[in-house]
Image 1: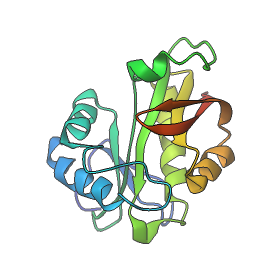
Image 2: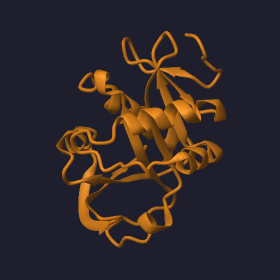
Image 3: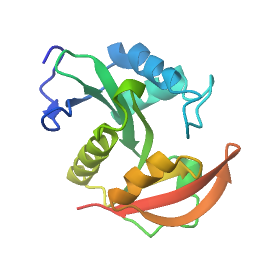
Image 4: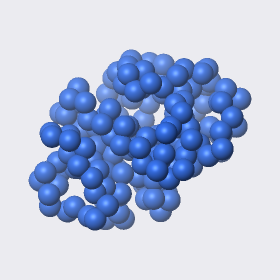
Length: 176
């Protein structure tokens, strides 16, 4: 695979390679995120996610890129320390070391092929390897595709909230 790193891992036949995002990937990831604005279920806009979100995820080591054999960016997702606003919600199961899954995006032309699920499985395994015991996320109640993916992955719906002008479903899964 072109552009692979020692930290890249194949997700399976036809599912691409996951590798930690590098600073050089920021523009490409942002372009992917922007390409998803206005798609069914998307809550993103021209301000979010922005360059500062992508840069912060890269700096924390929480952003991962999914690439095809030719190095083309197929998707991206972040799994890292819970955002303070998310952590403060009272719906979560008590945890020793949880993480937040966020900003999961797959190129429109590749959606419906199992790539989001493959990325989430990979990030659950990686987060467990890092000692995390729970993965948490907010998913728009108006995003049935994402809700189905997380349900199939075994996430439990533990409540709802309204933040950032969106009604969210709060979901979590025990890791390990």
